[in-house]
Amino acid sequence: MQITVLSGGVGGARFVRGLVDALQHQGHEETLQDQGRQGAPDPTRVTVIGNTGDDITLFGLRVCPDLDTLLYTLGGGVDEAQGWGRAGDGRQVMEELAALGVQPQWFGLGDLDLGTHVARSQWLGQGLSLSEVTGRLAERWGLPALGVQLLPASDQPIETHVVVDGPEGPDGPERAIHFQEWWVRHRAALPARRFTVAGLGQARPAPGVLEAIREADVVILPPSNPVVSIGIILGVPGVRDALRGTRAPVVGVSPLIGGRPVRGHADACLAPLGVELSAAGVAGLYADFLSGWLVDEADRDGSFPRGVTVERQDILMRDRVGAGRVARAALDLGLRLR
Ligand code: FO1
Image (tube, rainbow, N blue to C red; front, side, top):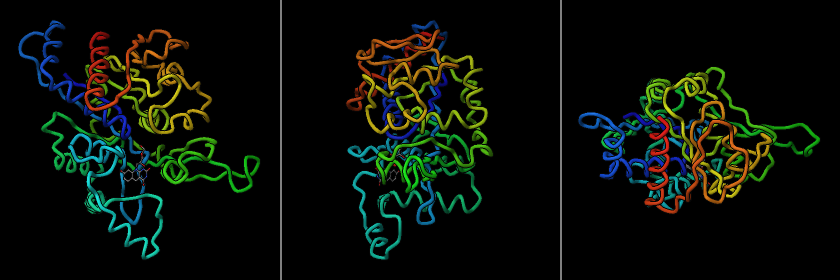
C-alpha cells in the first residue's frame, strides 16, 4: 500500500509519526486483510511531500524548517516541547554570532541543528539537488527503515513572502517580508495583505512527487496550515492537477477545532484569503479534490463542500498516542472511501 502525505512542519510531522506508529501497530494489517486484499499484505510505504516555502537562507546556510522538523520528529531527535529544532541543543554559535553583531538574531538556530544546515548547504553547493540532500538526511535519521520517504515539494528554491503594510500604514505602499520574519519575528501579528511565493513560476515538482500522488492508495492532508504549508505545495505547478486526477481518495484532517487553530497562526493566514475560519471553510480550499474530511466533534455546523464525506471525532493530537489515533482515523476514512 502506498500512502502519500502532504505536510507542513510541527503538526504534520507529529501526524506522520502517529501514522507510522499506527501502521506498526498489529491491528493495521488486520484492517487491510479485512478489506478483502489477497495474499500477504504488501509493505506499506509512506511518502511525505514536505513544504519548502518556509525555506530561508541565513548566515549563508540553507535552512528548510519543515523538512527538518519532519526529519527530527520521525527520527526521534526533535525538541518535543518546541516541536521543531533538536532535543538538547545549545546556542553557542548563535551567542558568538550575536557577539559579532551578525544579523538576524530573531531566528534561533541551535548548534546541532546548524550541523544539518552546514551539511545541506555544502551538498547543495556541490551540485546535489534538494531531493538528494533530503535523501541523505533521511538516511541519517533512519526514515527508510520506518518505511518513510521524504520528498521536498520542489527542488527549485521557493520562498513564501508576506505582503504587509509599509511604514505609512494601511493606506500607504506595501512591503514584502520573508515568511519566517513575519511568523517568528512578528508572531504573525502584522496584518498580511496577501502571500506571494517567490520562484513558484519556475518550480517543478521534485522527482517522485507526482508519481507518489498518482500511484497512491490514499492521499492524506494532515492538520497542517492550509495556506502557508499545504497551500504552497498545492501551488507547485502540476501538484493540484495530480490530486484532481488521482484514483486515490484524498482525505484531510481539519487544522481548526471550533474555528480556532490548534497551533500556529492559521487564522492570520486565512484572513487575507477571505476564507471562513472554520473546518468547513478550510475544506472549501480543497473542494476540487477532497473526498473525506475529519473534523472535531466541536465542528457540527458549516456548509462543507458537496461530495465530501465528513467524519467527526476528537481530533486534538494531545500526545503521540493521540496523534496515532487521529492518523489511524484519517487512514481508515481513506481506506473506506477507496
Ligand atoms: N520558530 C520560532 O518561533 N522561533 C525560532 O527562532 C525558530 C527557529 C527555527 C530554526 C530551525 C527550524 O527548523 C525551525 C525554527 N522555528 C522557529 C520554527 C519555524 O519557524 C516555523 O514554525 C515553521 O517554519 C512553520 O512551519
